[in-house]
Length: 284
Image (cartoon, rainbow, N blue to C red; front, side, top):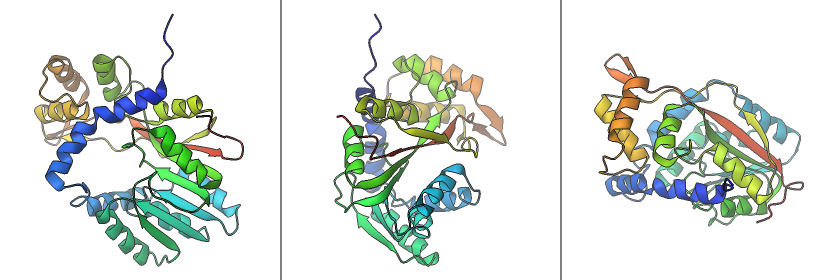
């Protein structure tokens, strides 16, 4: 008989598998890995936000139906979502652990002439905030090993609707093929597919809307050797050469040479997961 998958355990194990990469980055930058990257991250976000998408449309519609609503942005980053929701809500609380990101966020909010956002420096779920009507976490849950605790705390401070925006890799992507070889399943890291099953395991039957703006821009590498090193780091393989032959062949087959670099195949879009907290109460 096939053993039932424990998705909560899988989420935790995938987060732990990537801790080596995070520790290396912190050794280079200090505890705040965004010190040298926050403004470049924000510039990329501004470019992406020049095109509308279905996630923003749905959240805007939700806030429009709640006059005087308050919104919580967990892991607010450089403030793109905080500013967006602030123009449609009475007030927004933006929780963000990175001092570098908060500096960029404050500049962005000032540039957008947004004055109804309260910035709280802290890590979720440790950061304490008052209840809000709507809560959102956009791609900021990937570093937490205990996703149920993250979700329960989010539900606890939400009166109406919780939103999670997450990466949704394609089942036939390069990373999925590598993960199947290394780990025996297609999940190279925490993602929508794992998280949705965690929600089901908690007793939450959430709605899902896939973003209609297509796949994310592809990664690129200067060489196949660099791509192999990057791939090994993403899987936390360290100095092990056990999977090198398979991974090198995989990269030769699936990366595309372009203008002196190698482009990785597109394989990720975003999924918006949302539920009404009055109807969906977590069971664990």
